[in-house]
Image (cartoon, rainbow, N blue to C red; front, side, top):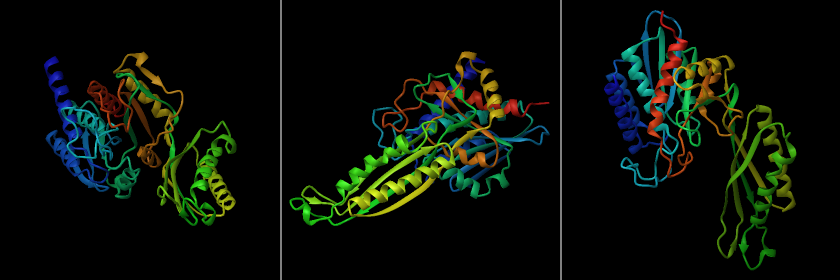
Length: 385
């Protein structure tokens, strides 16, 4: 038995390293999707559908006569980040890397697929959902628009994300809001540029842009209730100026995070008031684009209790934790929860580099924990007769 376990762990590592070495951006995961589909067919799956929502894969596994179904989801896409370091399985695709651990998420779900296909132990239908383009915030929507719920219906859904800073072997989730919405904004200021030596002959925008960046910080600190968690971050300031020329155009880009639609609406409202007022005071024109990319991720309270109970069957009790606060990061897993209740959980990745860091790597010692949680929740929610 130990030998079989060691071989299985070696297989997991080999799959993960292969995926890590061949990262693909959202909706470009052709090699990754083919890898996943091939493995599912090798495992003897009843049905494997490719091209769902572009490059998504859905595998279906049925056992017994139960009429209930659940979904287990993993994301497959990588980021446009140049990997640092000298790992033996370092990214072979220049400018792309698995800096968020989706190689590990895909591997954990493949491992669970293999063992559940071999061992059974459940009664009903499991949908294994391998999703593209999570980082874009478009992959879940694309699969849903492609008829995911009609073609592969399920009653509830579960997802996992690794978490740097949380020890390997520690499981964490919470009821209600666990991850935030993400809104994006782009504010363009337009004036008249000119020579840096003669600012009085121009109507340049850089000073106005700098003032606006600072003014936007008052939205959360002065215009929203301290009881409502939210974040407004300016991430880029771009101009058409140069060293000795004052710019005539400036673009301010960033994002906002919140947990309730009414707070998102208030952030947009206050942003428009501040941007228009700042532009008026500096005598420049302003254009504001505000879009909503991710919705809040709200865990189902009853299913959270089921997820915690499943985790306690595979980990020491002290390693199964309830998160005290939601995160202001976002996840498009939230879109699935519009159609079925579900739970999103975190598994520790130890003392690794942060997510989206060029030195990040998924910790292979956490792979088996993810496999075991997928198996445990599937068998708990679809108990064998």
